[in-house]
Image 1 (cartoon, rainbow, N blue to C red):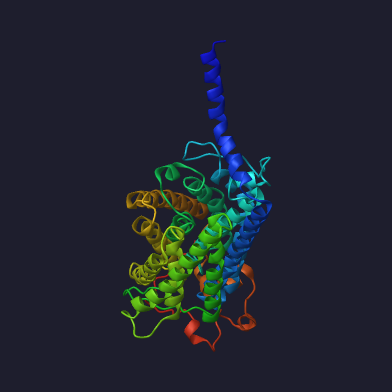
Image 2 (tube, rainbow, N blue to C red):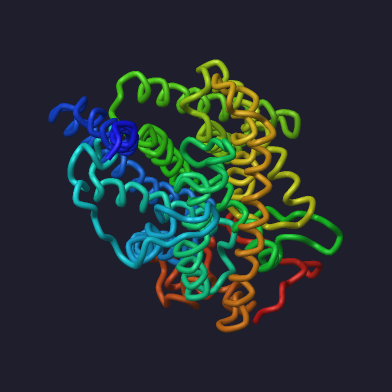
Length: 461
């Protein structure tokens, strides 16, 4: 064998080993203490994201009427169960398929930890384990479906919703996530979404919008003459508790998306997250002052959530000042969107579309405007927004129409008027409702949904 040929073989072998050597070198940089700290931080963040489900349940039940409380709590309890199980069986394998064509791939049914899954090598310099990775990502999957629940509240059949949510979490969310977080075609294009303004919030928001449109408004919400009949929620204290629980959960949602306990990065992410939330609440108050002299608590609460959603795409690549601007604009947008939804007669009881879709889009676009990384361009961010919009709208519509054809989608008019707690669950959240013929207490007249002769009832199925 010639000397040149031997030299060539040695060179080729060294080139082939370079990635493995680099990975081993990165893993070697992580001490046992750092590995443990990273993994513990990620597990804490997993718990914080889990708490967000309690926040969603509190917000949705607080902003909806008391006669539907059990129904809302049932849905928000069932979604994490469905989300974790479907993500275990199929979602994780779809979202992180390994080698695939950039659009669709599948690593297989169930979970199968690699040999290094419990070691620092699994995530190179990040250092969390395979099981922590799955559980953290599973919480995100369930969160995406929870967003849809609020927009279709008070008129959707409970089993129909759960069927939709199961299919949505099992297929739509993980396939969409694979395009960016799974290393797919949008990742290759340079699209950036740090913690999910688009991948979680806009994907859920598009599903919420499609569901609200297909279902139609609640009975009595809009009159034939174009009037909007207010349907106040049953418990503003519960809504406030829910928003603060969600804000707390966002410390894990964004803080955990650093994927390590890196002190510098986690610190700046939590600062930008909180600044955007505060600015969002103030921005909503200012925007609503142009509509009414009376400050609206629900608008301020949705403004806080709007700021959180808005900064989620770029929490790690924007400055604190930029996060304040992003949050303030998100707060103004959520007020304008809520007003617009009523003008075009799209009934969204909790403002899910306005908070998660509108502000999710804004947050994604904001990366192209405010990111400190010059590689994040506005054009690429817009490409991602359009791609996810088209995919999610088509998939959501197909799923809703399929469920409608097989199971029906909307409860009867009689059941809606009486309340879904009685019709769907045969129980009430509050004892005084069990003795009433209608699902509202006489001592709380402002909570009752106004019904007039001019109301446009949606047909029951």
